[in-house]
Length: 304
Image 1 (cartoon, rainbow, N blue to C red):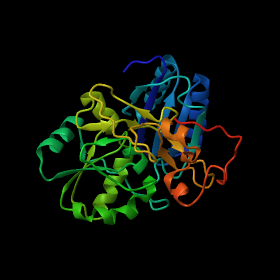
Image 2: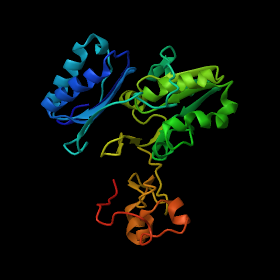
Image 3: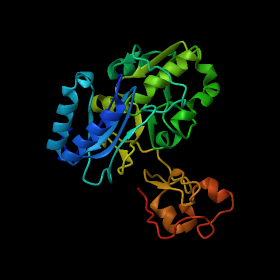
């Protein structure tokens, strides 16, 4: 996928003995190349998404892969622009994706299925069930057909949600996420709780769509940057609906209420019709209005 300002998504679980030094090195490299985005580093590995001019991205990838620890790191690429990320953030974290805080789970690596094998099992195995381990606001705008979407606000909430999936323990669970990083830990969690047949979509939605487009996929794919969603136009079936009016939309807004800031789908028409629709349905149902909500009235607000 070509672009003069590409966005790359990558991760790898690998031991990093001196993560503090690696953070400093990554920051210096990205700043020298003029890249923006977010890179999380921990003793367990790296999780990054960066954007910049194509030549700068190529130089970054070459430098990263020159390190033997990351020689085989998989890079997923989508088109972006100069506004995809507002700034560069490189942070040291206890985990590169948080599942259970201080209770670390060693990620699974032995049950990946290629997109073609995953697709074939989904199509032909009557005992297979597709499970979306992303957050509810991600699956609201796009998911695989017939997928069971986990009712969670954050990935760290997944352990508490497993009781609701108890009936799947004897099934073949085909789990997926955006790029694969969450599935490696989710798979280990599921297996530790008695789920016997768990398979991961290797490379996640991004890799699947590069090969199969919208086959068995509905809607758009949520991404954690200023674009909010990316899409494959051929055969697109929109499923996102405005949280207030039910109109089709793929636009997101953060709840206007400062203590909330929940991310929800909102159509421009609903926003124009009623300024209170700048609040999420839960805050609006509690009796708040755009006049009574606690928010910074000088702060910019827009649909994204």
